[in-house]
Image 1 (cartoon, one colour):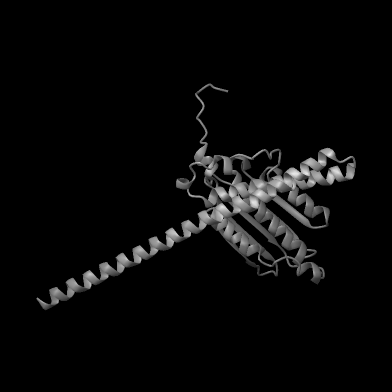
Image 2: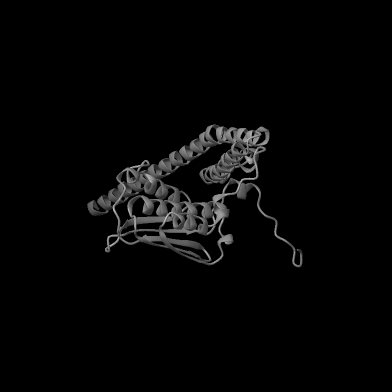
Length: 267
């Protein structure tokens, strides 16, 4: 009888501990969800608003200026601002939960009169590779599969991974060889950027420029869209970045405005 009572007590205490652990987990999840929504709101209300103003002002300067050089610079600013807006809207869309998406079409889905920008995902990775080759970096690009099947936020994340990898090569590994490999599969995108050891002296001033948190920030960005991110030194003295991303990540725009399926035979 004593043994049975003891077992019952242990079972009750175990169940209570497990329940408390589940409740703690749910509370932590709720706090994280609320923080994501708060960050999304701040990004939209503050950052997106100010970048939109910058784009509008640059567009106005492009129209009214009589100086061709000023017009060209203004167009560059406007295009860069449009790219930033596209990325901000994607990030806001990922941060917001589907349940909070109702009523945000004007905030996230619409451009508010600012349009015509080219998203970084639309530029293609070959542009990044050519930019590096233009400054003397030997880069080989292997891109397998159809890039268009990935959602915009995934394409932009992949672009940023390759961009960060090539930027780090230029700063920390002069004279090395670089390989960029991207494979688009049915359910994921696999990326790898690897380089050999540097063969030239590192420019200390260039290497120390920047915040030094690029790879850490990329890891957080990749995890935000449900991917994995690894980086580190190679045995030959080089460096590697590897990542896997889901092929499709919904944002508030995709929840609010689902595509209608076409009827058979419809063009």
